[in-house]
Amino acid sequence: MELVVLSHEYISPKYTIQGLKLNLGCGKQIKQGFDNIDIIKHKGIIKIDLFKEQLSNYYKKNSIDYVFSSHFFEHIPHNVKNDFTFFDSFVKEILYITKENAILDIVVPFPKLKMLIYPDHIRLIDSLTFSHFILNNSLLLLKREIIRKPNYHLKKYFKINFGKKHSIRLLFRVMPKWRE
Image 1: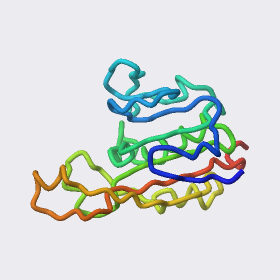
Image 2: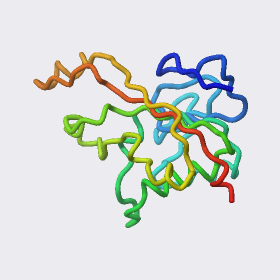
Image 3: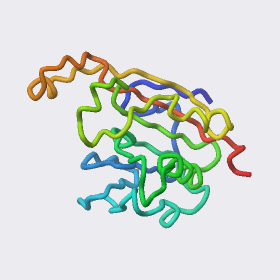
Image 4: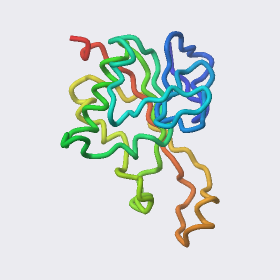
């Protein structure tokens, strides 16, 4: 079945995702039909500190069909509890709980150095960030999509022209080789 992307908000109804879906680092952006996860407890949100707790404490191996995350991955620190490979460990944890052929759907700021002026933006993310997961056949990049949306909210705070390339969306499929 072909994956058709119509916008950054959802995957086409032509590809219906059944089963358990996660919305990681959701803030107050609650998605219906998802387990919405964030560090701060709000109505409809499961409170999990994703930098201190493992998702496998809450979800079984091979149990998740779809993982969505919007503007969270750029906040993942380089070092947590002296683990200097924390980002890789975090992605491996996602791969551990996802089913074979699950979808990993990530929206992050367009990778420009200007985006690092936010003190909580730790890293620039693009498809190359996941290259070793792609090279070892854990992930298959399905689509890299530029989301053009003016950054009007930024112009009132900064005298920097961020342009119209606001975000990129990366769609991956979890590959069977990871299951060995």
